[in-house]
Image (cartoon, rainbow over all chains, first blue to last red; front, side):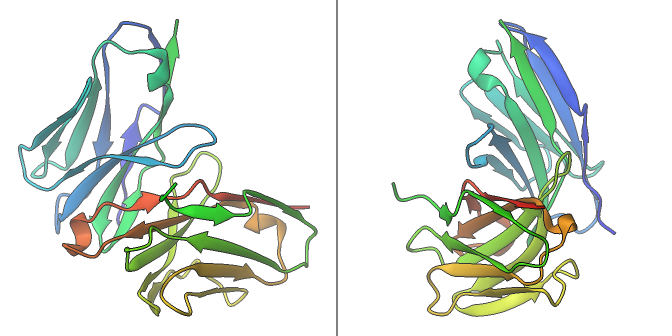
Length: 109
Length: 116
């Protein structure tokens, strides 16, 4: 059974602080790792698709790294803003997407 | 708006009733996926279509569930004889089949089903 784990489950961060969280996935038969952001009452929004070991992707203040050999990815948010409050989900791609349960990020003003 | 749309956004039904949800994907996307998400969990794969062909079904999809994509465009997900355990958010996503496992899936806002 393929398992994708995310930690922490939830995170409270002061506005302006930087933060990061983890996605762990099976290191064998790796194809791709997806990151999504899901705000309440909205559609999940694709952030990154990562395929290569050592890959690093960036979108504004958000960046992600990938280690396929040890099976983890980190998502970093620099200088958190209230609009960053959302649940951040990662998904391991194996034809279908196998999802973690997400990290719920709450930014405190 | 050219994103994925789902209808209805919310559905409340009594146990034993049938419900049907609709998903309209991004128009040029040939793949369409259905997921179910319950509180505190990530989305769980239910089924996906390549054009009008249903290529994979999860074992989560009991015989009370059926999905169709008759013309390779919109899709419907029907749940017959609903049970309280069917209460969840039902998400639809679509993608353009370019590279398979690395294709980005674009999601609709979901249909939240509550079975009383």
